[in-house]
Amino acid sequence: MPVPAATRERCRSMLGPGEDIRYVFPALAMSPPATATFLVVVTDRSVTLLSMAGRDSPSGVWATYPRRTRLGPMELRPIEFGSGPRIEIDGMVFEVDVEYAAVVAAADAEAFSPGDLPRDPLPDL
Image (tube, rainbow, N blue to C red; front, side):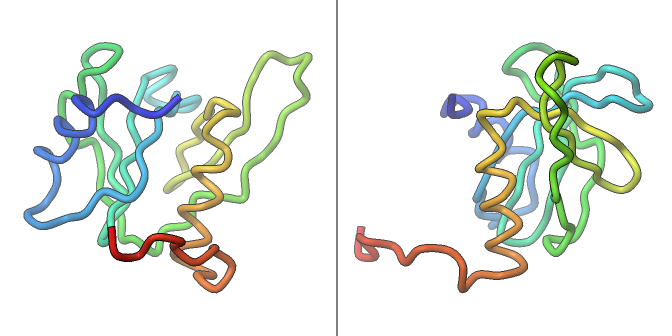
């Protein structure tokens, strides 16, 4: 499920001037700060972790990394353990809902192998 437009606007207000949001997805920190919820915001210039005050309310910038920060590969967990795919950013382990696995893969492909992305079918829109 996409992150709501209102949440994306709140995210945009916490980013640097002129940063263009490419991808946003929620992630649950599995290492300190234990079980804290974040939004991972990938822009044209950075990967920013926003801490969450509520379900849809980013409360502040936790950390900002260069855009060339790799999010994957995702560590896939067997479904019987009840946990989703995991990624690591700067030593922190995050669980991501399986529905956002394609978002993580697309963000990495855009930064590290843009030739693997399909061309925009409607570039003039």
